[in-house]
Image (cartoon, rainbow, N blue to C red; front, side, top):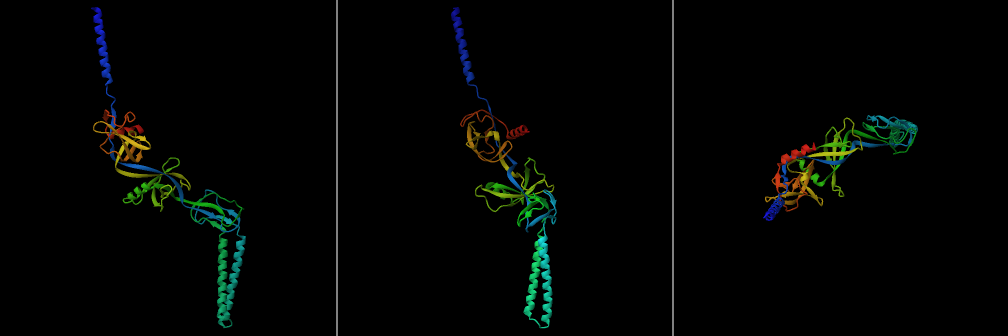
Length: 360
């Protein structure tokens, strides 16, 4: 009897253990976190690589041949309009001017004598006209000689900064040879390329704005302390890149910016009623973005979305999801298309606030 009792107890224990294991195997999976897209007004900042140019940047070249007699400026020096920069030895041109001056005076005397003779009908009117023509020619030669002499003094055409000096004092200068460059940095022109869709969006915004304000991010990742404005757009798109060049103008009162610098243009665009989702709610497959939408039966559906813009931690969606949809926020790598899930819903405002706290 005692053996029968022990056998009965052992069977009961095995039966209980089997039932417990079966119940545990039916335990529900972990609940996943779900949220919804948020419709909100936001600002998107587009960044474009840019080239910075002086409003005026010209090459100063010799207009006459000769020896560089004097150099009055140094590299990087600020000069005023009309200031003397270089002097080419003027000896030859001075002599030519004096010769032309003497010939002009002689021609004037000849005109006076011929006029006196013509008044007494000793010479014809044609001879007088010929003398007057010779005098005009002599004066023209004098003016030309004066111009050549003036070209030996090279002056600044406007206020600006002198660039590298290509020749030293005493060098033989050929006509047309580069001496230096001069940059007017009082205002800077900044060029950047914009794609066709962005260009069309810009033109649409012009209906309510005269000029779009932009900012300049300098090479040291600091924002330039004066805003600029888009003032002009080139006439044609580049067929190879599909872009068109914009030009923004920036004041440069402190002289910080120099010709040839690089940076980035920051263009801000206001977007009303934008559909926003967290970036971590998306996954990328073959260069396309997807989200899992949870339907009314708690089944996830893998859905492609089109990204309109990107801001820190968030995507602005062009199409693919709507404001009332439920999207999987966490655990997107743990499910597959068509899976039925158990989830907890978190309001999108709370999700966004949490993202901001994490980024801070």
